[in-house]
Amino acid sequence: MKRRGFLKFTGLSASAIIIAPSLITENLYASDGGLYKAYEKVQLKDKEGNPLTIKSLKKEENYLFHFPMKSTPCILVDLGERTQKDVTLKADDGTKYIFKGGVGENDSIVAFSAICPHQLTHPTPETSLFQYVSNAGKTLSHDKGGVFVCSSHLSAFNPKEGGKRVSGPATEGLTQIVLEVDKDNTIWAVGVLGPSKFHDYFDAFKDEFKKYYEGRRRAKKLVKHEAKVVSLDSFSKDIIQY
Image (cartoon, rainbow, N blue to C red):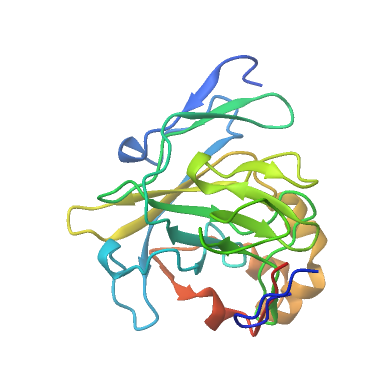
């Protein structure tokens, strides 16, 4: 179990939804509105309120922000190496969608919803059992690092393949947060791609929303204009990783 750095081992039928991040607009949707949804373009900013840039990111660091709603956590990572491109993924209902790749100068920056698709484990201010494990890291969830891990039930997901599930009881991949990088190297969140668990999430954690957001209604408010980005270890008091 890892606590602050300590690790101890113990419809679209057959067609595919193709989304190119550089072409995203608020009017671009999958035909059923399900696997891609555009939201207001939100600028990512650091804790001082300065625009986050690709050059300010530390390689393989977990950065947390909330999008598209005020209570839905996401993790952004510069993987330090190029992702795969045009990866075809499939939801449990058989709908296919395509991960176009990372963004930034090296196509290495990705972001995913930090809500595990298995049983909705997610980071909170108290605890995080969901995080990216570096290439040099070790995890019981997979035979190597370089994956997102949910330590609740040991599911692992490969961010270089669009959050594809690679081990554990989860049956779907992670929901991608679609990013754009402007000419000034600032980073923006513009949409969500893949089967999301937001509806189930809002049904499951009413007490949590009351504690942190004064109720579910406020928790479901959309993020507007900007999203604050912090390191995961400054957001969660206790980080647990098996």
